[in-house]
Each structure stands twice: as C-alpha cells, then as structure tokens.
Image 1 (cartoon, one colour):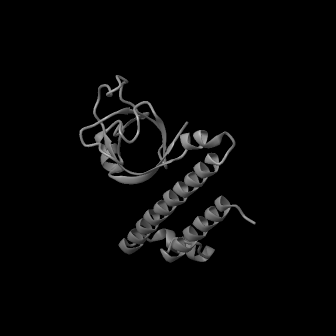
Image 2: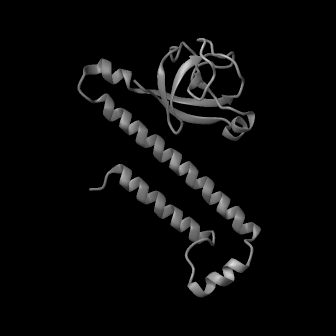
Length: 175
C-alpha cells in the first residue's frame, strides 16, 4: 500500500502531465519540435499555461496543508499524554495578511520574517506556530485589525506583501 504522501505526489505529477498536454506544452515528436520552437506561443497557449500553473499551485498548497495537518494529528497521538498532544495541535485555519513596516514589535523585537502579529486572546504572545506553506514563526506582535483567527506576517517590501495578498492557511502549535 502506498503512503498518502506518495499517492498525493503521484497525483500531482499526473495532473501536471495531463495539464501540460492539454495546454500544448507536452511531449512532441522530434520532427515537430523544430517547427514548434520556431513559432512563438499563442496568447491562448500562454493563458492556458498560466491557468494550469495556478491550478497546480493551489493543488500543491492543499496537499501540503493536508500533509502537515495529518502529521500534526499523528504527533498529537504520541506518548506523553494529552498535554503534549495539546501543545502540538491544530490551532485553526486563519486569514493571513502581510505588512512591511520597519521598527519593533509589541514585544520589543525588531521586525523580521520570524514575526507574526496575532490576537493574544487566540494565540498568546511568545508562542511558536507553524503556518502551512510558510513555516515556523513567533507570535510577537499585535495589531489593531488583528482580531480572532487573523494573522499578519512581516515581509521586507510592499511589493512582496502585494504579491502575497490575502490567504487562508492552517496553523499549528510548533512546540
């Protein structure tokens, strides 16, 4: 029996090959390759390729979040009683935004990619959390708009924040 990880990876690769063939970027006969390389891609091919890449990105993020959630559930079941499991558990799905301001956080630390702003009633300051697809960060800041299941991560530029946008991600305790 294949593991969930191997099955998910096989599914993503198969989807990528099928999507590539449908978008016209799949395997070609050698004789057609020279002709295909001489012609620029059409607007339709570029649009289809972009759509395929976006779909694969969503599929990858979903598969990654499911894997991390399964891993957190397995860690919660390890020896050590309910207190250890509770420390490593799923916190919830949060709406994540971004800020690029300089300075220091509410706890006095300088802003960095390790910083995340939280609602201290939901996640206490100082808590290490794992954000699916982003990694481990420290709850060391608060914000006026950060209420409930909402997080604000720090990135070094407004362009990076604009590109990040608003996302929903799974959050777990890291310790």
